Length: 104
Image (cartoon, rainbow, N blue to C red; front, top):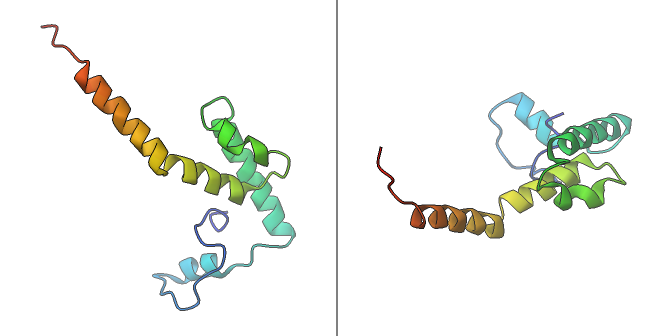
């Protein structure tokens, strides 16, 4: 099912792949009954991982369609985005700035 969670919606026809498996994964058509089933399965897996956590608001709008690929992209866009990374940095700097040595 790894063919569902990849970055490109349309494969690059001139890209060079290390293995035939990578080429097949990139070139597979994202349609048909097997794709729909796999896509819903991926959605179910991702939903169970983020349902009770801070990631749920970022994918809750996809619950109706159960779109695994869109869910993966939404999660990646949020957690790899500048806003989240800046928040993480600020939190780390704040922890360091407010730290005090208490002795042994």
